[in-house]
Length: 315
Length: 273
Figure 1 (cartoon, rainbow over the protein chains, first blue to last red):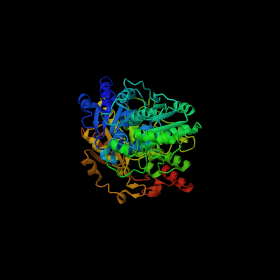
Figure 2 (figure 1 turned 90 degrees about the horizontal axis):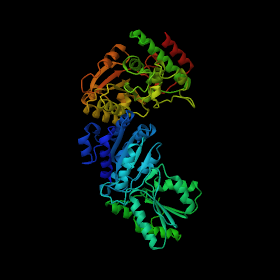
Figure 3 (figure 1 turned 45 degrees about the vertical axis):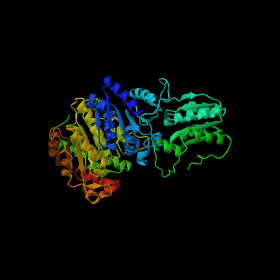
Figure 4 (figure 1 turned 180 degrees about the vertical axis):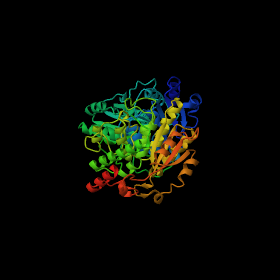
């Protein structure tokens, strides 16, 4: 996903000489092509994220189209105040490309996880938040990002994610993408959890249930019209995300549902705020917190039967 | 007409201080001392050094100025009014509800405000980005960033300093308003800034120390930028917090305090004499 994204930026940079690429000393090998071809427009800022964001602001104020890269917690959290003022408030043309959404860097430990990034970025004015679900979507968003003249945070995984879309996805920033249609249950999902949501669809289908899966690739601005429509059409709505249960997709959808007087079943699947001390890779950790199709399907069935759920009751 | 005589700049500085005093007194705003310490530096920049056009504020080859110590903006606003970027009416909109100008600068290039500042430690990095764009675009303009001494406590300043040296940004000038007082006390009582010149030198900058209220020294410094080819320039300007009104000079309280009626009258009297 990461390589796919930057391959597009590489290609674009051949014609677009306003593209500047900054990294805070991460992305080994990722920028070799760019830095060889366009050394005047590539900068390893050093392990100094706050400085990177400030420099990006200065470049953007000078008419440049700036891409900043790092692993998400360093990119977003270390430099959050620079992002808040220099980029978001001033509404500058800077794209923040973060690697390692959720538990992607599983075995590297907590310092490298991105569990709060969506909540943090949702709170910022002018900030668009995009979470591609596969390499093909990442490529499409890379293309769309160039002409998007305001800040975007793009939350990527890492590499080797399977393509979910069989053909080039027809995506539009700010518009949810309906992946499956069914009459019984609606699931809003995002990023790495899209494939899980599709598997949930398959499992529930075996129970005779029709499931609509919607890919909310743009968390902000949220496709409120679509969510409102679904809140009128469905009596059971679920969200699945690889992020703390607070402040991300589930919270965003809940806000719309409540304001639209939705009174059906609603449940968020995500990562509890009380993380346990575990060691494991991304898949291990997702399973540990029940973020897989089997657990979520079971939970959904229990919720629909009005029973207690194993992965509910998140603090 | 701009004149070159030192008396002219001294008179201008006095008027600017009166305007600052008036702005702060009227609105009960803080940061009088921090505004007074940078008056001569700003007068020098805006009336001689900077290549800027108030009639064409977006002029692309203009020199860039960033007031990284955003809390000193009463001084900047007074100067921008003197220089014709903003109107007297704009100044009347300082620090009031539904007003025009806040107690920290808000980006508005038309009014001559290049960057939103107020959180210390941001300006130099942004200046580095601008200087980099200018250098890579073969543009001749320079970027001036005015920092406070307390601001040098911020690690991001030194991140920017190292990067600027590595990339030989000799179109970048950092001016340090070294009035020796920060928010809670004397700078050296809080963290150790000294030896400050050696610090900047060892970070790869070319440094000049000047009296930040002496126009001859200020002009000499700005006139010699870059002090060395392929190095960013730092001007350590020794200044006095509250400069210009004797009972405010070198007093921490004037970081916060707004003058009462008697203090206002005495200050105006001293600035008018």
